[in-house]
Image (tube, rainbow, N blue to C red; front, side):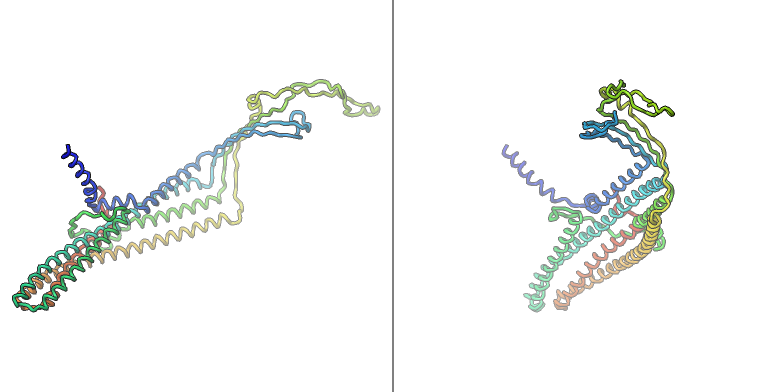
Length: 477
């Protein structure tokens, strides 16, 4: 039982250790960055907003329906709606209504607004894709920088090991009287310099890891590390194409050009919407209303005993009064409220034509503004084309030059290896001083670092060129 508990204890201790040993691949880094980057999330929210705007555009084709109801009290001197007399009374009124209106024609503005909303969704999708591509490119660059710093650190570590061994060998040569004691002092200084270079290489690796971890928005960046992927030099098929072919392919596939093109189409739709305000608009409407009151109603009449007759005229010639009987209304309680609603209901429907004649040049100025916006969008599209051509030419030239630099660095490295081997043999037999020997060794280290630098520079430049050619930076799994 005790043994089992000890085993569980050590297993629990091992959990965080294993968690810290996670090595991120390039694919995982790119996917994680795209999923968690704030700019990407903002672009996703922009896409949701454009989808909501499309729903607004669809809603413009639907009727507007509204219902209303009110109940009021009138207290004090008011006209009795039953008798027509002013009386001090308290009355209550209830009314209800329904209104419906629908656009029959609005100068095609609703149709153009819907088309614009569809274009806006496409444009926002391109912007989201562009954001993801930029992040993938930045992550790949930071990832390759870490790989470079790792290999460079290995070179420095090997150099420290070798020079420490060489220091021991120098001590033996000094003791044997083959080389002077000053060579031993120079060798001690060389080992100290190597230790400084090793610390600098370690710091460069740490900073590059920190940069990528921050790009991924990781909290535990101290334990962040990437897998030791061996990215070999490859001959890309894109390099066999001419720059003009790559530019043509880039114009067909590059997202920034599609964004500029969609902005031109959006500007054209804005002009169509603005011009729609010149045309008449036709609206259909329908309304229903009813009302009820708690006022007494007239249920009959009876002779007015207080004033039975009233004079309405005179007989010509005799001037005899012409009388008519007076009647007083017989008031009763109001009808039930639902009966009143049924008796008092009414409907109103029709169409309304609105013809714009003059509105202070507002419509004309709005159209002119949209034309200016179209010209601006077209200029932006032309500028994007020029920028794309320049970027492709630059990427093409950089890839070619970095390939040549890498090949030259390999040749230089082989020459430095032979030179160092020759210098080592001469130094060990006392035919070369330690200064010249260290110079040969430094040139070898520089050649190794240059091979690493040009290697990863060439890989990254090739990826960018393929990117312009339409080849994804990272293949989705």
